[in-house]
Length: 348
Image 1 (cartoon, rainbow, N blue to C red):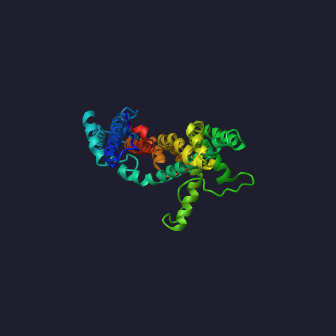
Image 2: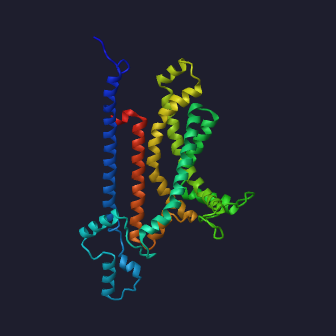
Image 3: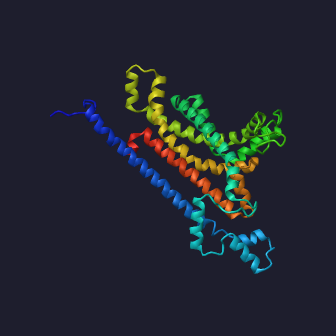
């Protein structure tokens, strides 16, 4: 009996196999997109009821005792839709959210969507740069440490990564402020202690860009050091698992040099868990950015949420929670789709 493999098949057979692979990947993409939509729907429900069960009356909190009559209190509740039944409030909330209307801030008296758009870019800049630097440096440390397992570099990088992993972000940020912003001993205080721009510099000019980079240096370094340990340790562990596989021995037997075996074969497969970790860590980096923005007084979404807690400004808290949650869900969706492209086994 003759077995016809894909390699022996002619163009007709190859053309018949391609639609099957495309259909499998299409179903995979559809299932992941439906899962992301389900997560978004669940997040909307949690966001609505979470801030409705928080202690405190928004009207009394904002009024600080200034609402002397029930009519004034009723007028406030009517203006913010708090006089409606809870199911009707939920329907109104869904309609407004889908149109980008998150309500009016109790503290700033401006639309919450305008506040979020104004504060979003500093957070994206901080989280994006930190994630890129932490991933690149962490992956490089993991690759070099695993390829020279037990060496001086491996022991030093692993020990340093574990030490940084155990440090809270805010404490590490305060150490960097004390050392490089305030100055410590012979080290001069060069970097700003906080803020995103200097008062006397136009942020849209070339000088303003360099000024912004100087203000972001310590916060970005803080988040990078706090999260690169994850990527370094996972990459090191994944690569060590790959080093014992038979296909690497086959590659060496074909005459490939060690650097080619590492980069072409071992590293590619070891990168798969790290790809997933990058997306999963987005949520942790965003939560870490809240403390870092507070420590360094960066006007981003994290500092906005912290300021909203002091009122409490329910609509700002609800809007920032929605945006942050949607960003994490989107990042995980992108990682799932990318993982399906990198590893065909995931699609089946």
